[in-house]
Length: 173
Image (cartoon, helix red, strand yellow):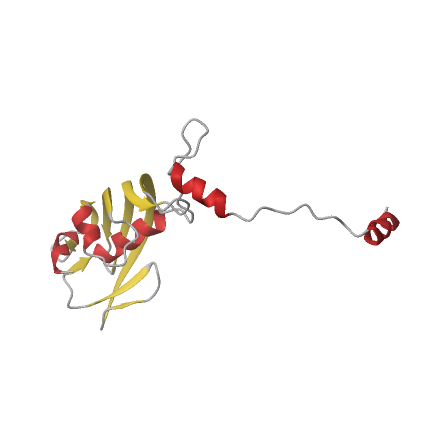
């Protein structure tokens, strides 16, 4: 991930207070991650860094469009994403991730690399189910694939009930 150095914030020389940074995650960003569910996209990432005397506070605002695979027809489509997240950074002897929202950086660190957090926040913005949006009341999915799905879907058989059960059900009423 050497090609992702531009997603780094050097905080050592910054004064206490608010600082703003902007990053863009594009196709070359997503290509750096082998297992990414997003293969293409253009996402703007705004980061507000609030530097306190003993810790850093980072507020992420993610907004853009990504191309994902439809869960229903397996065709790619583009969808919009919006996400906000907060990351707190404290300082200690070693660098370790304490939780989703807390990172401990080594006292010797002078910068924080954000590419992994940006990647994860973009994926967290994706809905659980990714399906083409409807267009004029019709699915945007590939019509050939939808026909194949219909052909292979098991049809529910009309089940005749045992008359003995029907009489027992009558006792409930």
